Image (cartoon, rainbow, N blue to C red; front, top):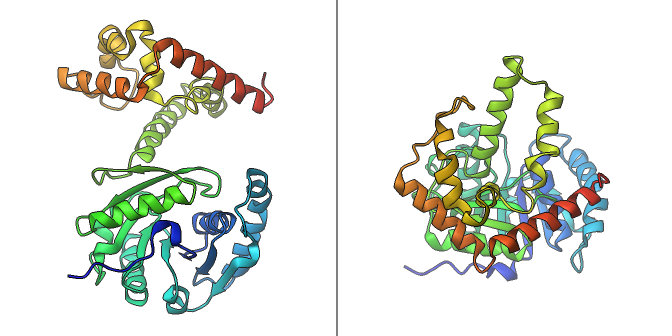
Length: 316
């Protein structure tokens, strides 16, 4: 079987964005700022008006961050016909509403009118590609590229294929997003909600529990993050943050010392059992992520980052 002759990730020139709502429009603004020609399609009658308004509102921030050579809002074309929008593209990013029936149908329609060598990526925030690709004639070129709102500012994209997705498509998609300036997580397995959404959903559920029980106000919950752990997370994620909580002993000491507190009724979520295998996996993962950086190095890095964030926000 001959491999599809798709463009190399760095050779992509035209991107088609299917769906022009908040997420789809954010993608349009981002790709325009990165110098791509963008073709957008959305069935809503006022889609073009809303899209150009969104891009216009995003453009000052994108300009401040720095535009790629040739970047211009003039590179946006809005098509009323899906086949025309997909005909000459190098990459498709679908951002339709989170409705499984709609996603399945639309991806099959995109698949039918898009050149066979072009990758089709979905912005879905919860569905797995396996459950969305089953109506596609060429499911092997469909993949999830899950962004975060607003896509034109938040760098993270989670990439994961379905059971029918070709491994080279996952690799190509990750390479394309990285070339386009995104921070990419390539997931080894499909997980409902992906990685970041599951973490933020856990925090969200706990917040709702506390409000419902009268244990905390909305304002208290927000302040607890913005002036608490939220200041550390842009520097080190939750794993390295707790790695430092163990002092010079790192994550191993933290788990051994604080591990029993996992059984405390602090959360409505059932705690994972701290088995030796889980403990070792977390400790080894922190050591890999830290690399050559010592605990002292990480502390200094964290402190510099938090100070920079506080200053940037005018709070120090």
